[in-house]
Amino acid sequence: MSLLSPRDEVAASVEVWQLWQRVKGDTDPSVAFNPFDASIGDGTDRTNLVKIGGQWTHLFGSSVEVNINGGWVQSFGTKSGIVATVMGDDTIVPTIGNQGWFEYGDRLGLRITKGWIADLFLNGTAGPQPVGNTLHGGVGLRISY
Image (tube, rainbow, N blue to C red; front, side, top):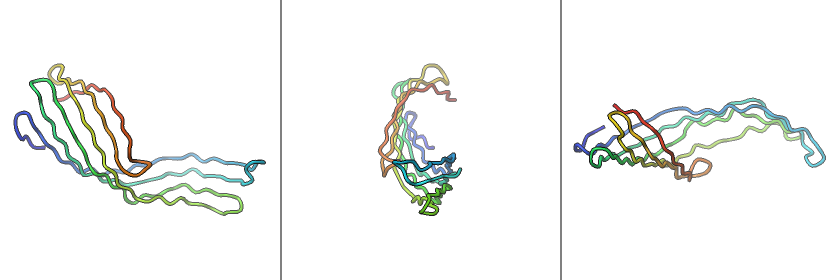
């Protein structure tokens, strides 16, 4: 983090983490409209992620701060632990490719008292599905010292 002026600061970051999703197994017996018995065992999908990002924050007056941020995220070493067995087709293991996407956001903060800040924020992603092209916002209360 670097202070450009008493009202402006910038920061750069590198994040590395792993995500996993546990999936509970299921069976799908054959019926008249579905002639294939299928079962999926319990499994865990895993992916490693690295993000390179940055942000800029500006203080207006003594109580309003605005922040914009963004970063590139790249997945690697993605692996599915799910195996499906379909009668007549043997086993099927999904292949999951690595993906990259851009994350962005902004925040409007109102300093209520020393250390307490109320925030409105908007965050999104841009990139391929299923990760990209989402947008969400919210309200938060933050403690800052």
